Length: 193
Image 1: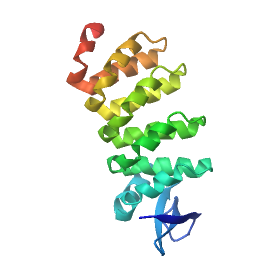
Image 2 (image 1 turned 180 degrees about the horizontal axis):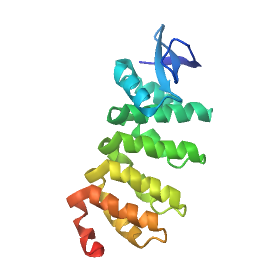
Image 3 (image 1 turned 135 degrees about the horizontal axis):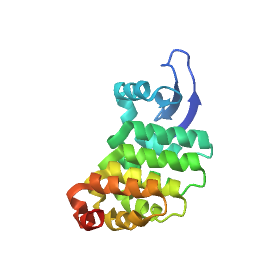
């Protein structure tokens, strides 16, 4: 399956707050909806109703390399709304965690969190993010690890180190993440009592 071209389009007949990406594939056009300004619940319901949207993960992955940061951010958010079924995008989303643009990077953390345990291959990169000097990046990494849950067990030693972090919020989030990882984090119990 190859996608020859794509172009962003709007149409007043489409659901409020959604923009379509028209994709020319194998001589045919199909429309994939990207959520823009819709309320999260509306966008999520729209995605559930669009069975071809889940099949559009390869197209959204391609859009992650677009030079336009707005298109990249929308593609990332769409992958997050697809959730665990967007697991094929995890390698690309993991690379985006190092993007220089804060909004793009934050969106990638959120998308990986929405993919949940299916994003477990991102755990090594998230462990690296836990060492970042920027506390926002550390908090985003912790939040993502929380959503990955027990599949993030290899992050337990790094999370234990964060129990001494200078940021109270990071320390509290690390405790919550250890709880979400569950029994796999039992080595943290002595530090928590």
